[in-house]
Length: 391
Image 1 (spheres, one colour):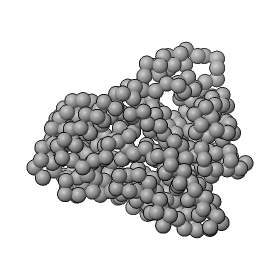
Image 2 (cartoon, helix red, strand yellow):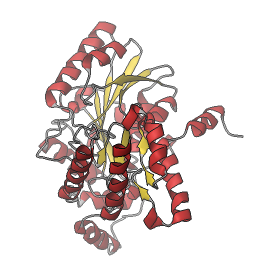
Image 3 (tube, one colour):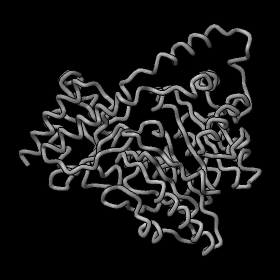
Image 4 (cartoon, one colour):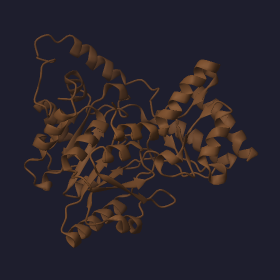
C-alpha cells in the first residue's frame, strides 16, 4: 500500500533523524544524563522574553478574527511589514507583499518553490556539504539533484559549479550560513556565482533560479555580515524561518519572498496553489500575528558564539582539523582517519552521538550541533578529545 518511491526514501532515511532516534534508545537504556547527544539542531535555548509577552497579548484578543481563514498567502499586514524589513536590509530592495507568501517554516517554503518551478527531469544543483533533506525535496517533485562540491574550506567552488550546469539546470539551492559547515559565503563569491549563472542562462537560453535558504541568517558571529545573493540576481527566491532566530522550531512559521525583478506575474498564484496542494492551506494564523510583533527581535547570539568558541578551541587544541564556523550552531570537524562512520561508532561507545558527514555529502567529516546544554557539551568534549588522542 506504500508507494515505491516512499518505501525507497524511508529506507535511505535521514542520518540526522536516525542518530536522534538512536539517542532516544540509549537515553532509555542508560539515562538521559549519561548520553551526550549532539545530533539534532533542536535549540535548548528558550525563546526571548518578548515572545512570551506577545503570546500573552494575543491570547487576550477576542474580536480580531485571529483564528479565521485568511488569504492562502497570509495576512496582508504581516506581509507588508516583512517586505519593509527586507527592503530596509537590502535583501530584496524592491519587494512588496505581492512577492511574499507565509509558510509553515522554511522546509514548507522550499517544497512549494520546488513544486512550483520543476518539471519532471529538471536538474537542481545542491552544494556539498548540504542539508540532506534537500535531496528528498527535489526528487519528491520528479526533479534530479546534481551535487557540486565546495572547496576544502567550504567556500564556493565556482569551477566545480560551472561544470555541473547543463541545459537541464532549473535551480540552485544555496544555504548561507551553511548547515553543516557554518560557512558564510562572501559577497564577492556570491556576486561571481550570480555572474556565472547569468552567463549560463545566456549560453543555454534557459532560466536558472537561485533558491536562497536563509534560516540561520541572524546566527552569525564575529561581526560577520550575511549577503543575500537574491539582492543581485533577478530569478531568485529567499526562504526564511524564525525557527532559529526566535528558537521556535516547533512552531513552524516562515515565508518565501521572490525577487520582483523575476517579472513573473503568476508566481505568487503558483506558490499559493502549491501551498494548498501540500495540505497546509495557510501558515498558522496565530504565528503570523506573533512574528509580526517580533520582526526586530532575536535570541542572544552571544549564547551560541560562546559555545562555538569553547568547542572550536577544545577540538583544535586536541588535534582535530576543523574550520572555524562563522555562523549557525554547528561545527564540522574532519574525522580521524577520514572515516566519519567509523568515528561515529567509536563515539557511540562513549555514549556520544554525532552525525557522520555521509548525510551531508561529505564523508570525511562529522557534524556537532552545539545548541544544547553545557553539561552535554562538556561531557561530550571529554570523550571527543580522548578519541582523537587515541587515534
